[in-house]
Amino acid sequence: MKKSCFLISYRKYHNPTGNYLESDVFERAKNDGFDAIEPLYNPGQLTVDVAKKVREKVLNLGLDVSCLSYAISFLHTSKEDAVRSLKDAVDSAKALGSPFIHHTFEGGLNNDLEIYQKAHKHFVEVIREVAYYAGEQGIDCIYEDQGYYVNTPERIANLLADVDLPNTGVCLDVGNSLFYDIPAERWAGIFSKYIKHVHIKDYIRKPAETAPIKGWHRTIEGNYLRGTVVGHGVVDFEKIFTILLANGYDGYFSLEYEGREDVLESVKESLANTEFFYNKAKANVEYLNLK
Image 1 (cartoon, rainbow, N blue to C red):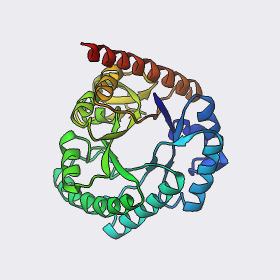
Image 2 (cartoon, rainbow, N blue to C red):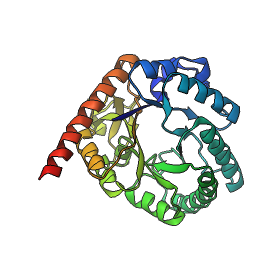
Image 3 (cartoon, helix red, strand yellow):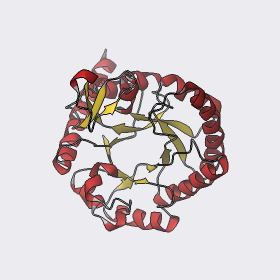
Image 4 (cartoon, rainbow, N blue to C red):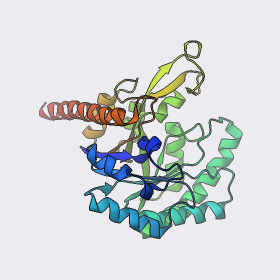
């Protein structure tokens, strides 16, 4: 199993401005048993020079960079500005030695169909120009189920079909699909051939009438979610991993812990539980292959 740490898992223990070089998150990831890290940066935070320094520090620890996540929201940004920002991120991803750049579109929980229909055209135009550029750098652009705008299998399928470039694919976030009340195994089954990277997280889910509002996220159907330790929530990891492995997935599983429990202990427990479910899924696939 290829184990990556999405560094926002340690968000309480690094500089909130995103300056990982001034924190010990790389060392924490190494000591906790990860093979790679996945940093998250906002526009303007990661220059090529900074990326080279991050790469050097990561390599010195014997780690790899599984992906660069870039927190851009360009629904209300011009095509020119969005493309310019994302091309800068591609340059930084190359300097990091990352095979992928994963970026957001719009993380908000707005489900206005008319806005989405206009947004889709904008997203496709930006993605195509950026993905062409990324392809020249040997980097793939990957997109996840996030927010309400791009969080159904149909919308991601339409996005990939309209972009229609070989260096684009899916980042499966096994928790985010719950915001649209869709089980992640459905995503894993539909997009198994397009999934290049996986985000691991878990959520406790409660109906609205039983959930405290503060600190919980509302789903499209009115349920509520709260992040928790992997294995403590409702995500069916064994089923998801079995689908992925049966279809040949051999990429990183990147832990994105966002619960309220003690961070350092919860990251370790989440990683251990992820490995437990992975091994169960691997055994399932080996058994099926013997049939």
